[in-house]
Image (cartoon, rainbow, N blue to C red; front, side):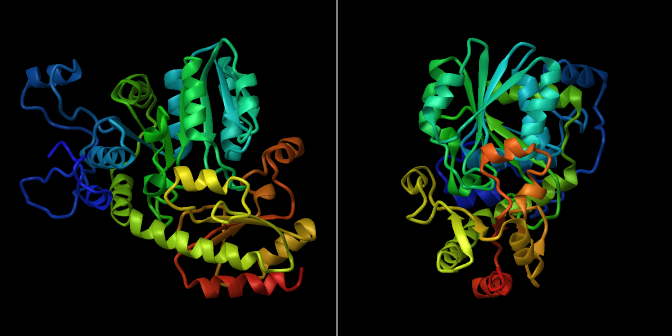
Length: 394
């Protein structure tokens, strides 16, 4: 079946892309093979010359990986998906595929710290420069665009302050200047937000996070049009080898099957936790778009179906108080990963954004008292009790 548009999200999440073998397996098969056998030399020549479709070499054609690519693309509403070895590989491949020396990126300053390092320290070696702007200030985006700007890049919601980027407005701005809009949809997933339907050109993912949902594998993905993703971006994967393994692709397929169910529970727990944190005396400020107090609550309601599973908050007392809260937990996992069924906690200033300069962290609003919680699927009362132990001493 090729046309899945008439089916709902959950049906697509468990059905799209599977091609059963002659064994008639019900679960998707894993194809742990590096190469493929051709019927004859003519078939081999035709495939290498792209005169007929088919598997060639697992660096860039593998049935299990293709299954994941097609399923994720169907959930995001894109024509083409491309799986990569990590979320950073997805961003790197996208930039290398679409940009050349002398080009310019305008990016939100509220993006993952390693993405900032990629733009500043690595892409700059290829004479690709980046200007960072306030995610929520449309005037700063407009002012930063230059004659050589080719790409606008953002995460929304941002990590870890849960700021919202106005995707339709940024898409209109990008296209008015002949630029492409790239949205990192890692924190919402297509279960909560579909940037392509809002005007974005490309969506990138760290599949490591919510798409897997259980912290098992590293992977990434790019979704967009056949022309963009299947053209210059895919060319980077084919020759550069930013390849997802078949086993990881199979894990992510299993994750997609339960994605919507998990995201609803993550949202339930995160909303309950955020409302509870508002009542804690030791908490100075909470960052969660589901709260009416969030400055962009209305925008979050407009472009997301729900508000996500990440909650960040500042405690009084700076780094010492923040570390005390973290170190007092007993069931919450102290790890910088997110999107897991298990609740995790981290101190962004010294972990995910630790490689940024103090000025860069300050510009991004990452202060020493900030704590980020990736709210899992446990009983929310247990999560609250685990945090209360440290909050009662701050």
